Length: 300
Image 1 (cartoon, one colour):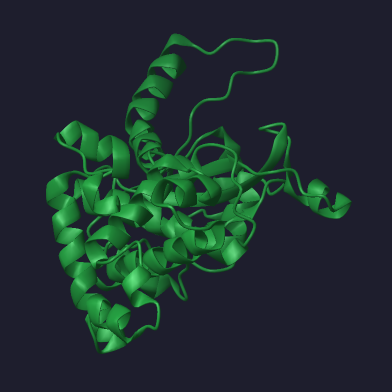
Image 2 (cartoon, one colour):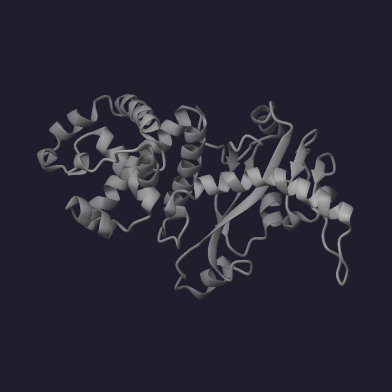
């Protein structure tokens, strides 16, 4: 059934799976090659060897990747996905996980997947050796309210007034996402998250121009060797000067690129609405894959 549901225009392709037909075809080619390398046989051969392979609703890598991207883009439940493809909810979930793992592997092999951590300052400098300006920001998503009271307190974000997961992103002026942290619970402050990922005792960010927002107060003290560009904070009971307002606008015009990057991730509605993903490993894989798909999409 899924092979009959295909977009017609470039706009439809992007609205249904987040990338256009050209990029989809290229991604499928990568996935076919990677699946064979990982499994020593084609997807179709795997179905032939399965006792119930002839009953499969998804009969090719092309259909598996389309289905996976459709779930990421729409954020629909597996109950609804199963209804659309006429199989049960558990199979809808298993097929998605299979497709997600394959897409994640391909994006990593092809170099589009952002790094999730840095083992050393040298590794960081190697990743950003062609960039002078780095833009930091955090992305946050509401989650279903946990039943456990302690988990409720840990995941509650005072900023969003809701239970959330959050992660930190580092992008460059070309909107490419080079790094995205593993997700943290909502109560974690943006700057605390940064210090957890980048130990202030080490010599991070030397020689880089760093753009951050007012959520990173204290950055200069903990990372003194970075060239910091931080917006001017309005004084209590006072006003910013015209010069400060102009400077803030200039900084905002550069920082908007990281907002575009976050918007690129959240083109995938699975990361936009209230998350129903309870498994933290799956959530992190979705987060990384959506960032990698954005990098793949903008790299032409």
